[in-house]
Each structure stands twice: as structure tokens, then as C-alpha cells.
Length: 90
Image 1 (cartoon, rainbow, N blue to C red):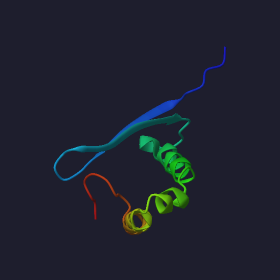
Image 2: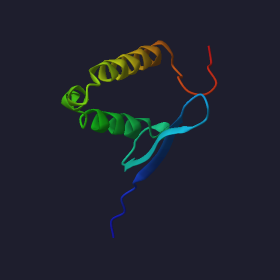
Image 3: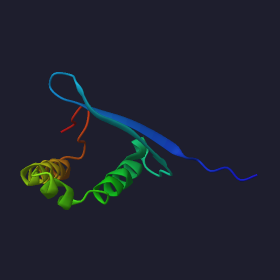
Image 4: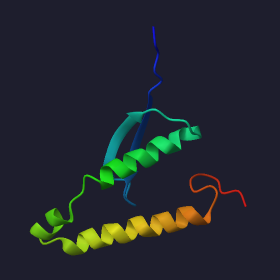
């Protein structure tokens, strides 16, 4: 019998009022602590499923640009620090 270890990561995002914005779950193989490689794969998969065209067709092109800017800013912050979530160790 062959066993395959599949990891599952659940996530959610709330606004400043504590209201749920989005929640989801990803699963797959992971080789890193806290399944960080699996999280990156999930992000890449989601990004590859987005079409700018859908924003333009609904007259929300500026929202697309706003989301892209937020993603870029988040990535820039991630690059600055060894630890991005939780207690920051300097």
C-alpha cells in the first residue's frame, strides 16, 4: 500500500470591521514548515485564473489596478523581512 501525505490549509480574510471578505481552502503536497510552499502554489493558481478583461467588461478596470498594487506592495513587504506573519524577530 502506498500512502500519500496531502496537506490542507484553510484561510480567511476579514476587513477592519471583522466582516468576512473571503475564505477558502487549498490542499496538496508540502515540503516546508507551515505549508508555505503550498500557499505559494495556491496564490499562483488563483492569479492564473484571473482575467483583466472581466474587470474592464464590468467597468472596474481601476479595481483591477488597485488589487495588483496591493499584491505588489504585499510582496515588497514580504521581501523585507524574514518573518512576515506573527511576532517579528529582529
